[in-house]
Image (cartoon, rainbow, N blue to C red):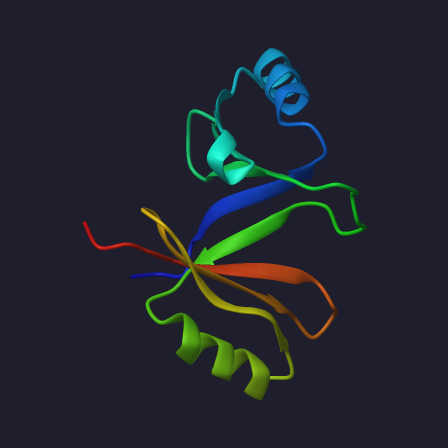
Amino acid sequence: MGNAIVHIEISVTDLNKAKEFYSKVFGWKVNIMPQMTYALFETGSEPNGGFNKVDKLKAGGAVFYIRVDDIEKKLKEIEKAGGKTVKKKSEIPGFGWEALFKDVFGNVLGLFTPAKK
């Protein structure tokens, strides 16, 4: 498996407003998941992504998720190369696992491993 970008996450303060805007402007299909305060979007081609509801937006914008086979192993490699773990591996029920890291420039990126089907 390659290490392709598999998910883009955009932080927003209002899921309904994000759905309205991105559906209208780009034609994206948006599915709000209220139990997770999250919405998935489909762009019509990969990568797709999600809207992460936050109370206040921070600098940095979108988070790109890179698909990997072993998140913990990859985080060790990242740290050895000068990066830093921001969020340890955690489960996204029904979807897989994620983690966040900073690269050597301070950019925050994500790692993702899908759940086995």
